[in-house]
Length: 208
Ligand code: HEM
Image (cartoon, rainbow, N blue to C red; front, top):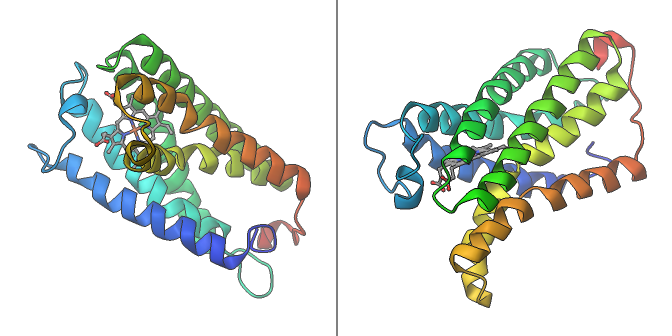
C-alpha cells in the first residue's frame, strides 16, 4: 500500500484520521462537550451515538496503521490484533450509524445518504472478514481498502462541513448533499486505486 499511496499521503490520512477520531471520543461523555446540537437532537442519540462515535473513532484511529508495512513487505504480528479490533468496531458502529440515519434531523434525504453509507460500510467490512477467513488475502486487501475508504467518510464529512461554508456551500441542502458526498467519491477513489494496483506482492500466508 505504501507503494500505492506514497508515505506523505498516508501520513496526511493518518493525521486527519487521528484528529477526527480523537475529537469524536467526546461523545463518550454523558454530556458531550462541543457536541453538535443538531446531532444531539437526533431522536436516536444517546446510547446509539456513544456506541457509534466511540467505535467509529476506534476504527478511524486504528485503520490507517493497517496499511503500513515492515521493510520486508510483511505485516507485523500486530496486524492481526489491530485488524480484529478494527473489524469488530466497524461491524458494531455501522448498525448504530444506521439507526442514527433514521433519526437524522436533516430529514430523509440525509438519512438515505447515511443509511446507504452504513450498509456499504458494514458489507465491505464483512466481506473483508470473510475473505481473510477463507485465506484469500488479495480479496481481503481489496475489501479492507474499500472499508477504510468508507470509515474515512467521517473525515471527508467534516472537511466538507468546515470547508464548504468558505465557498458558500452551507445550510440544510448542503448537509443533505454531504450525506452522499462524504462517501461516494471515497469509494470511487478506492476503486481507481484498486484498478491501478489490482494486487499487492503478498508473501506466504504468515506474512500478509
Ligand atoms: C462510515 C459509516 C458511518 C455512518 C453511516 C455514520 C452515520 C452517522 C449518522 C447518521 C450520524 C448522525 C447525523 C445526524 O443526526 O445528522 C452520525 C454522527 C456522528 N458520527 Fe458517524 N457515521 C459513520 C462513520 C463514523 C466514523 C468512522 C466516526 C468516527 C469518528 C463517526 C463519528 C460520528 C460522530 C462523532 C457523530 C456526531 C456528529 C458530529 O459531532 O459531527 N462516524 N454518524
